[in-house]
Image (cartoon, rainbow, N blue to C red):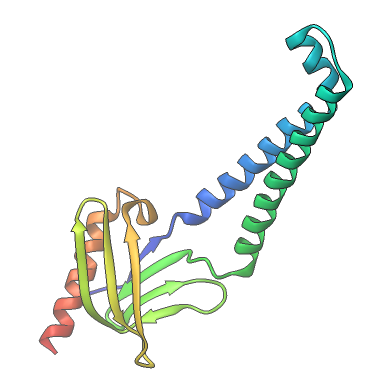
Length: 161
């Protein structure tokens, strides 16, 4: 079997979530800045208590959206997210910036729903057990069948040896 590489698509989703959090933050910033105009447009008048309440809610939501942005940023910058899966004769490598995870032996390959996901149970080179759930959204629908066949081929090679 030759070495096959599959892009792990979670990073794209995280970047999309970061963009979404910035958009959400911007929306609530506008609510905060235009609270008086918002009240006048809806009720026809603006009470200071109502404007204060809208500004309070907008502030809470801005803090939440900003917190989500920071959390996702820290996760991406930390380097512990997988960006590529490489299947070869030597094993399965889950590549990430802060040290790759190598699975040298597949003990079990559970496919509860073969079209959607599988659970890869195996062992690292140091003998530690690992279980990783990989779904079609991680690898991509176009490459899903090839990925599963590569895993099966690698497992069959192990069982023959």
